[in-house]
Amino acid sequence: MPTAPFDFHRSVLLTDTVEALQPVENRLFIDGTLGGGGHAEALLHAGARVIGFDRDATAVAYATRRLAWFGERFTPVHASFSEAPSALARLGIERIGGALLDLGVSSHQLDRADRGFSFMREGPLDMRMDPTSGVPAADLINTAPEETLEDIFRRFGEERAARRIARAIAMERTTKPLRTTQDLVRVVEGAAPRRGKIHPATRVFQAIRIAVNDELGSLERGLAGLAGLLESGSRLAVITFHSLEDRVVKEFFSDRSREWIDRPEWPAPRPNQSRIFRRITRKPITASEAECRENPRARSAKLRVVERI
Ligand SMILES: C[S@@+](CC[C@H](N)C(=O)[O-])C[C@H]1O[C@@H](n2cnc3c(N)ncnc32)[C@H](O)[C@@H]1O
Image (cartoon, rainbow, N blue to C red; front, side, top):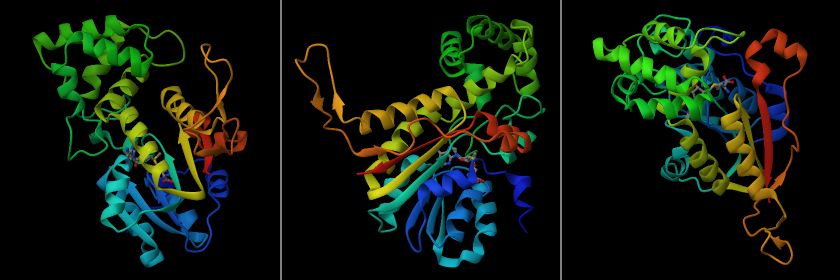
């Protein structure tokens, strides 16, 4: 039996997202990040059909149980949303009526110490969203060149002490490999003592998670794949939780919704040949104070929406 929905994950910006996607009877939506199935459930309640993707088999199993009573209107797929075009082709689907990505990890993934996502819980250094493929965080931390680690902390964690932390890890692993989340936390604390409110391990864990799951690469491929499947008039909604993924989405949307492009070497602006979207949100939609009070995770959520023209 599934546990209560909030135990697995509390959906953010639920009403705004579903309103933006305009679900109607029988229209087909892709939920690229099924998680606990909260957004998918709201779309199904509105009469839509949903194909839900997740890289995490635990999330797929949970959402499948939760959404079973919608019968054939819901189809789960255990895969990355970046594989949506080929997975949908196998199901004989060429066009979709809308898509949603609610990025990052679920509360369930963070809460499970054995997944290694949280620096506050002792567990193995894994951090894979799909533990059946790819390499665990421990492999990266114990074998990547020091410069690669530094680059990961700088690019994906925007960490100022990237070099010091990478050096401390490289020193530590010459005596014994880092195996657990707390092994890594201790090294990070030693190299970059806590100053402000944010624990020094926050950005390092974010950076490693992004690298281990190739989150930004999957996002770029996923956006391009989904954009190619949207039928005219249908919408793509994306919820991001940190500036790196938000930048990818913002640029992807802006490059494809701008009417004109101008370059210094051109005598006049030219029509944008890559224009396929109409912008629905000029500024991202963020959560209300009330939602943030109830669900602190909503504080950093940003919802951006475009419509296929
Ligand atoms: C924030 S949760 C989604 C919560 C969901 N919207 C809900 O209402 O319960 C993010 C989920 O997306 C999954 N995920 C992240 N990146 C993915 C990707 N590239 N492909 C498929 N699933 C992904 C994670 O495994 C996680 O279960």
